[in-house]
Length: 331
Image 1 (cartoon, rainbow, N blue to C red):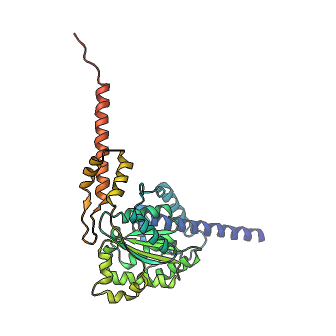
Image 2 (image 1 turned 180 degrees about the vertical axis):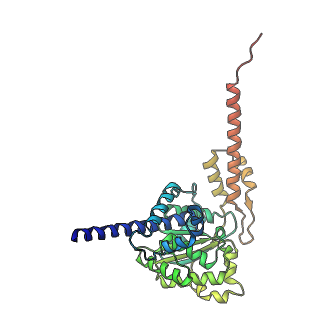
Image 3 (image 1 turned 60 degrees about the horizontal axis):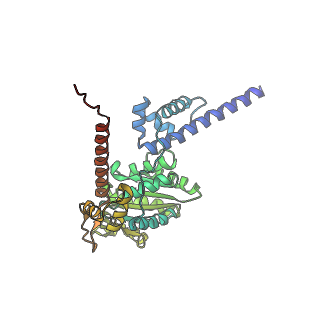
């Protein structure tokens, strides 16, 4: 009957919609949790191949895949992830202002590299800005995933909501399609990039995506001093196309100056004598062979601040305990 047929079409649309919603939720969950399909299969009891077919939007008949969608949705809702939070307080320094300027160019579809010694707050800054704008900045730490080109593209695909694919070429096409649909460019930040498995292969894969995206994807390669060396060593001829694109967008930063560190110290600990501040910062200074003045390593600075706060809290708790201690009775 006509009415039965219309009801059937409606059910088909509802089932399809539920599956698509579950796929989108799963991609976001994978991006935020860092879990791959195999890890999710182990946790949910599904076969790895079944999840690949589901995420790849393989054609199902009515009802097929609906059970998978419902089970995955229940599992994700039962294991919720916390909302992205700012990793702490970001203090304004000369280094953060330089990095903000560079990141602004990247968010407009530009390319660049960011490097510097340990303790210059590169990672903290990038994590902070990514947490501020999670819809516009893809932040990936290469050291956390042992990145090969395929692994990197799968992480990008999960974040951007592109369908799962096994070949690098298919993933590249899916990423480009999703990026071109956006109204504003994406900023792709690869941090700790000195840990990338194959520099030339990975960077060339990213370059092809950036070129074809037509400024819909900005790319920032960040890491330690090795990042600069990669583009300048004897194999840099293989990265000549990259060098041409980052010629005006290379940024080296170091830690805070003594004046900047003193302001941060006072804001965190409270007012103190100039001599005490100088003594506290003395162990945080690091010589930089490429700069005239030593810089303050931010890791050491905040470790020192935490030790001072911990000591104060312990002293305060001891005083409070003494006050609450009952007086002895005279017999």
